[in-house]
Image 1 (cartoon, helix red, strand yellow):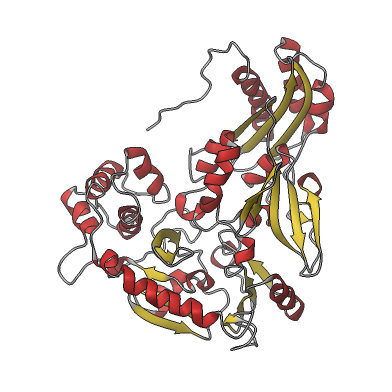
Image 2 (cartoon, helix red, strand yellow):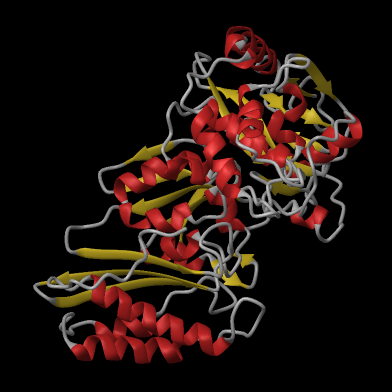
Length: 494
């Protein structure tokens, strides 16, 4: 059973397809058509809805935008689902809607419901955001009429007000209902769904949501053909783009032990089922050099769903985070419910879309060693659009320098091989070299020009990728000279 709120209405779902998306549920089951399908891939934001979820002690609600076209029903369990029809009160528009009217922010109107929901989430989250906050909040919404200026103006104007709407006034009752759902589900078993209704599982017959590692191991054993899913931002494309069906899914959405972030004396350990947005603060506290890479990880609605574990497990050669993890010498901590083991990330990707995971294992966490004082780290993503786009080339360099001499070169690359890749040849060529010398930059460029055999595709030619890779080493070298005054990044853009 999946239990949640639609606005203030309690809803229970017992028997739906495992691959039913939230957009399909809203339009086909609830017959609400304000939420639009634009791309069916999480790229355009026309389908944006908001999930309000309680914090750990049920004292507050957090409003999170998601792309309903690629969100599965497991994501709404014990949360409040809000879509555009819920905002107005009869003929009285919500402040967000009224602001868009006042600032002439709607043109053809197809994208407008998605924009409204993104603005609504910001309105209920951030009082008096600046323009940069607004741009990030709207980063997942595309306007086909290019009408961004009035939309931004409307957002800035309405968010200057203290949030005051029916949702804030109903916070107490919403939290009470969601707490009752959580309390009810915590009694009687470890699973959600499957053939264990009322016992081991919560969920639906074909959408299984375990709560603990032992129950997850049992779910995998009982359903060997089932796919594991967390944020669903990649897997859902199987349904929406390739039009394939999956009979059974095992969702990690209720696995709280996979959402823990901890530190040791030497490393940061991130639970695999944490959305990227939720781990950003911890990552940037210790690895601030990854800020641009994380900010450019798709869009905010995608970062609200996509998990670090999922970004690794799908083994895409153009995933954003694996190159960073390779450069940082991270370890992938895997589990089968009985035993845990650690796999160096450099040994995790064994082929195109293939990993070293065994059939009964899952990624439990990612351990990233802290940097030392003499390590220089930088991450670069090259794509056609600044945000909400896939890399043509991704390069992350982590170079250890002692008294001007290179001691260690760790680097991770995306878009240049069948898997996220390291480059031992770069380390071997540069160790012992004077980092500030021209020979160092020239040698690094030569190595990288010949290290990989990338392919031609719609994003870039092989020659372009090789040239960019070499030039990114040059850029890294320039940025890390002690006397550099060269600006290599565009800090202000439209």
